[in-house]
Each structure stands twice: as C-alpha cells, then as structure tokens.
Image (cartoon, rainbow, N blue to C red):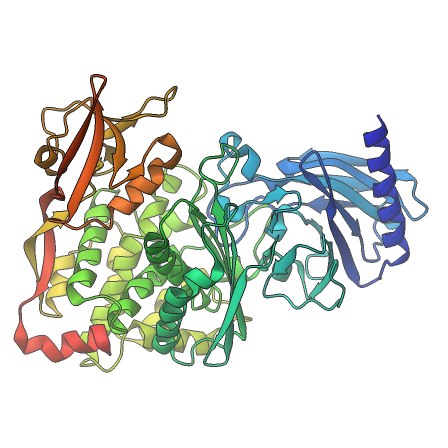
Length: 611
C-alpha cells in the first residue's frame, strides 16, 4: 500500500508541474525514467488549447516502416485524466489504442504508465526493433510511438518532449537536446510524425561519431554483458557508410544520422528475439544477438543497416500520400512496396558491387538466391495489390517477397534503363529525378506513379511495370539478365553444417541444455568427414563449450568456417567422451547461379554494376 501511495503522489506532483507549464500551441510530454514502478515508466501529457467538449487520445495501431498491426495502446496502463486543478475527468477506453475524454476543454494533464514489449515478447508479435525496453538503471529503448500518443485533430501540433533520466544514463538520438542538464533532456519537434521518427536509447555512454561528406554519423551500442562496443563495430560501419554516401552522391542532405544498436542477451528469456532494424529519416534502430562474434555481427550490420540507410531515398524522400499523411489509427497502405522496400533492398546489394565491397560473383549469387526465394512464393500475385492489402491475409503472408521479388523488380528496371540509355543512366538516376519531382514534403498519388516513371524513363519501363508489377505475369529474369550479357549456370553452393536449408540438423535437450545431432540416414559431409554420428552430443568445438545457452553463437560462427580448416570436436556418445579431429568439409549442393559470358556487352555490364 505504501509503495502504491507514494507512486500516486509522484504522479500527482508531476501532473501539477505540467499543468502550470501548459502551452496553447504545444503538446508537452514528460517521460520519467528516474522512477520505474514494476518495470513500467510514467508518462505525463499536457495538451494544447482544446475547445471541443470531448476528444480522443490515440496510440498508433501501426507505424511507418512496419507492415503489421501492432496496437501499441495495449501496453498502456492506469490511464488518468486531470483538470487544471488536479481533479479527475472522465476517460473511456473505446478500443485497443484510444481513450475518449469528456470535458476536453478542461483537461490539464493526462498520465499513464507504459509497459515495455521486450519482457513479454512471447505474448505478442511486435518486431523487436519496433518495440521498447525498460530496464531500470541500465537501458531504456524509447521507440517514441510506444510511449507517446496524439490528440485527434492535433497530430500536426508542435511537441515538446522532456525525458527525466538518471545522470549515469545518456540518450543517443538524432534529436537536439535543448536542455543543458545532465538529468533532463528536452526535445522540440514540429509534429507527431517527427516525434515518432526519432527513437532515443538511454544507457551508459557507449558511442562513437564520425563525419562523411558533412553528415555526422553517431553509432550507439547497448551490450548488456560488455561483449561488444561502439568502438569495436565502428570501423566496418564507417567503411560501409562511406561507400553508401559515395554511391548516392549528393542525393541525401541529412546532417546527422544515428544508428542505435541494442544487443540482446540470448541467455535471458525476457529479452528481444526479433533481429533486424527499423528505418527512420535520420536514424536506424537495430536489434541483434549479443552472442554473435564481432565478424559475424559486422556482416549482419553491413547488410541490415545499409538497407535501412537507403530508405532515405524511398519512402523517406519519395513516397505517396498514404505515407506523407500516415493514419496511425486506420492505416491505409500504398501500392508501391516494390519501390519502398524492393528498390531499397536492391540498392543495399548494388552499392556493394559498385563500391568494390563484394565481387561480381557475390552479386550474381545474391540475385540468384533472390530469384529462388521469389519463385518459392506466390509469383502470380500482383505486387501492387499485395502492397495495398499487406495488413490482411492472404497478402500479408507474401510480405517477405518485397525483399526478394521487390529487389528483382528494381534490378530489371535498372537493366532496362541501362540498355535503353547505352549505359549512361540507371535506376539511381530515376530515383534522383523522382526526388526532384516530389521530395520530403511533396507526395505523389499512388495511381500516378507508373505514368510519371514512364515519362522520366522509357515506354519499356512503363510496359514492364504494367505487365510484371501490377499484373500477374511472372518475370522472366533470364531474359533481363541476358541484356547485360549474364547467363545461367550451375554453381556449387555451400551451406551451414548445422542447417539443411532452414531445417536444423541438431536439436536440444531442454532439461540438460545439451546439443544433439539428429539421427539421419544422410548426415552431411561435415559430420561424416569427422565421424560424428546421429545421437552424438556436441559438447565442445575448438576449445569452446556449447550448450543451449550459446547455440546461436555456434550457428553464426559456423557461417564463417572454411573448408579444409583444422577442427577438433568433443562429443559424448553413449556416455563416453570422444575427441574427433580432422578438417572441415562444408556441406554443398548444386544450385542455379549466373555468370557473365557475352563479352560484346562488357561495357554495358560494367556501367550497370560500376557506373
């Protein structure tokens, strides 16, 4: 009782402070990270001047960059409304994300508690980089849409966000702190959408900064066990982002870009388990497992962050009205995920060959993999129809194809433009022209984009979009690659020793945490070369002990193994320990790949990959 009473007193005190600070033209929000109550933080909101008799306060149902229904209002508790002298006003929860407030003109402040999503990931499907973390005294990951809502009709009003935090914790963000205090941060943004697009991560300071072509890059890391540091991952990130900026040229004018890296402790059940990233105009929120080795983490960050960074092209610069005027309550999706996600994914691969980070063979292998993956999905579902309906079945089940077929759509458009312009222009040139035509503050109409692209390029591009993007015709990839002198061939593809496709060849005893080789009549070459048998318990590889606690590290580190490297494996077979030594033989299979064969098209091919 005493704890509950004291918490109530704190809430009331904060409420009174904000009542007197109320501004007619601002929504003022305070997030209190100094006092964590049962793993929840208190948020207090003071409204602008409201003249209506009632109003609705919403939390987002969906946020930009995600294509799922997440209902962030489900994580809000103890929603209270006070008038200007601290008395309660009536508030009724009308759906998962909304509260209707009576006597709205009398509102002095609102207070509520926010529960984070990482602790309870088994109960929902919110992708970790979109969610939130509350770990008292250690880390607060504030994806602001998880903590702050908006008054209906006031989403374009200025927001003043104050974050009260322990002096030992520092907030990484692309926002500008206007308060010099070590315990208060104050951020002012023009509207709710800008607040949502600026995540903040508080923890013990661990960050680096560097500048590329007048852009300040900030990399901040939270590694709960101190396994990784910002300094450790920065060299690889700097190399990658320098290459991206060189590839884009003057396309981006962002002055500051923040990469917030949250590393999850895989030995804890109540931590983030959805790995990847969420893009913003000036930031990326990344979640990865802490157990990764530095090399594997660097490779994952290179692919993930490069994709998110290229979102500054689309949809953050080039986008439809559905995105410009995003409806957080009843979201309407654009038809053009092929561009927002697909072209972005294509750029994330193209820039690496363009800037010499990967070889031609690597690039062809990546595109071949995307062709295989796309063919395994519904290749006759019109992409525009899937995009517009991506929040509902059966279309949402095809969402992952935006990273496969979507990227291949971008590749084919690039090839058409290169061929028709004799190599002088490509899809990056198209995106630059679209940026000039539209831009951050000017959106296009969904149904006008194809005609605009056609007018900026060639009739053949318009025909491709009509036939293969808005219609159900599968794309003949071999024909388009052939325009660049690239033809199909059979290649040897190396896999992971512990996976066959996406199916594990090992299992785990949940009680003992032991890793066990699954019995099989066809164990792969890695096992047979060393004499490992089905039912063997893997206990140690090259002096590193492995159990359920670090099995992810085993899977990821094995990705970097090379054939013919020496290896020592300890196994327990029928209660007896055996030490098996030999050389690694990575499992392989024949797969469809591509190679450059038509030397008459070498200049065209070079302009495509290096131009």
